[in-house]
Length: 83
Length: 373
Image 1: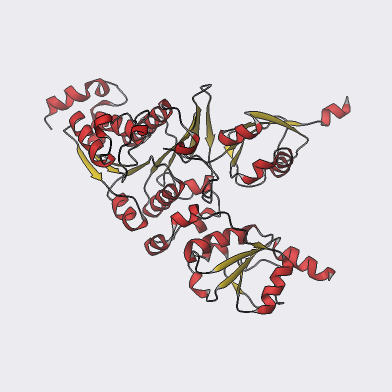
Image 2: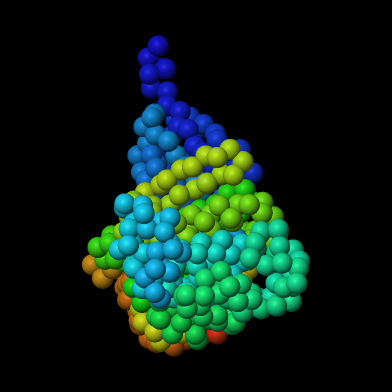
C-alpha cells in the first residue's frame, strides 16, 4: 500500500464563525504546508476567504507559511470583539 | 488600613502559602485600569475589588440598559439609565471601602487614552468593539503596559496577556495575532451575534485571575499565550503566540502619531477595492499627478527605473508619510502583500483625504507583464 503511505490528511479545528461555516473540525487531504491548506479550504468553503483568522500549528500560532506533516494539528481562530 | 482588618477581610487568601501577606500587600499597592464595565468588566471588577487591588480605574461612557442585565451582573433594574462607570464604582465601594475606585464616565479616545492608561500599571480590556481594542493595544505598546485581554462571541471566549515586561523583543501584542482590524460587519459583536450570559462571567473571572497572578507573581500566567474556552463543550485550548516582524510598522511610533490615528475609520469603513492591476497602474502613471512608493527594503531587487517613485521601506512608512504630497498614492512591493499593508497604514494617517492604492501582484508581476507586451 505505497499510495497509502504517501497519503496525508491534516486535521483542522475551527473556532467561532469559522466553525459555523465549515464545522468544528475538518480534514484536508494532501496539503504540504499552511498556504496550500488555506487554498484548499477556500476552494471548499469560499466564505472562509472573506474572513480574517489566525492559524496555529500544533498549538503554536504561526506568522508565515509552515510545513505540515500527517500528525499536524491545525487550528483556525477568528478575532472576537464582544465584551 | 489597620493590620487586624486587613487580616480579617483577606484572611482566606492570605493563608494560602503561595499568596501570603506579601501577595496581599502587592495587591493593595497595585493600580489596575478596567476599560469597559460590561459583561467582562463586571466580574473582573467585582473580584479585583473583593481581592483588595488598591486602586481601580473604570472607563465606560455607556449607561445601563435592560438587555445588559443578563450578563452584566453588577447592575440591577434600578440602575437602568445610570452611568456604568459611576454606578459600578458606587457598588464596588460598598463591597470594599478600603480601596480607591476612580470612575471615568467618558469614552476612551486617542485624546484621553494615553493620559488615563499611563496612571495605571496593568490594563484590562473588556471593551466590545474592535476600534477601541486596537487603540488600547497600541496605547499599551507605546506606554509599555501589560494588557490583560479578553473577548467573547456567542459561546466562546479568548483570554491572553500581552506584556512588554518579558524581554522586549519577544513581547507579543494583539496585532501579532490579527495585524489589522476587521472591517465593520466582518465580525459580529454581542448585540448582533448574541452571547450566553454566563460566558463573560467565566472569561471576565479568568481575566481577574490572570491580573491577580500577574501582580502577585504566583502560578503560570498567560503571557504570550492565548486561551480559548468553549462553554458548550468545555474545550480549552492554550496556544503559544509569537511576535511578527511586520507588527511594529502597524503601531504608531509615538504620541503624536497615536493622536493622528483614526481607529474608528480603520474599523468602520467598508472594505475598499484598493488593489489595482498592472494595466491600470500604467495608465495612472501615464496620467501623472501621483506618488508611487516602493515599500520594499532598500536592498531588494529587481530595481525599478521605468517610472518615478519614492523608496520608503514599510517599517519607516508612517514616519515618512509627510513625503507623500499628491492626492493619489500607489504603493508597490515585491508581491503585493506589503503594499496592501502600506495602504492600511496610509489610510490610518490620511483617512479619506487621499486615494490610496496597492499594485496587485507587486513589481514582479508588473515586470513579467511588461516583458510579454
